[in-house]
Image: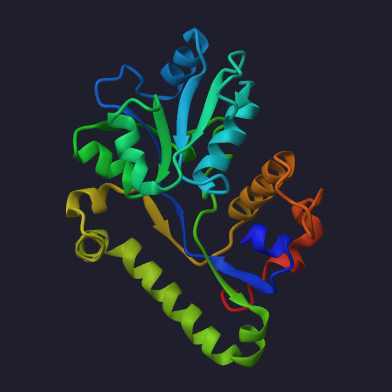
Length: 253
């Protein structure tokens, strides 16, 4: 959404649709089980640790990259840069996450639910930590991921319909959070995965744009600007400068 808005596409983010649900996965037999052992592994490695992701502008990649950057690690996407601590590897799509782990193409990866839970259930991986638990404590809670967005003309021409749609999404979000076992059953049937994997995927459904969630979008903007991804309306901008350009929260507030 941010990339589209930067390029001038006329739409607004109306609300989040969920937060959390992003995990870092290493092989099942790995001794890495938490941030502390992960950090130690990176510091002791004689070569850059290879971490996969499914899309360059995805929430999992940007949150992990920002956290690693703040932790003082040197990050690269250049396979020839042996001086880096971490080599980020673009695995192109989510379907390649688990195969990349079993083939040892990467040491580990970061990905959205349900893939971390599926990797654990299949016995090929273990979730060493959820992205929400990255240091500093609390900063990565409610990390932005999927959102609801609409074109400006849709919002103006169908305002009452958009309001009804957002009310429905809000009510069903609350229902999923309050009825996780039933929601997991529906999810498993819809997505073709086990109820166990669906139930263990750490997702919070919500249409409420909290401050931590909004701050996370600011982190994404800073990361993408640092990567040189913006060339238009968001280039060198901070979140406070462009909130009216990005958001229309009237339907959920």
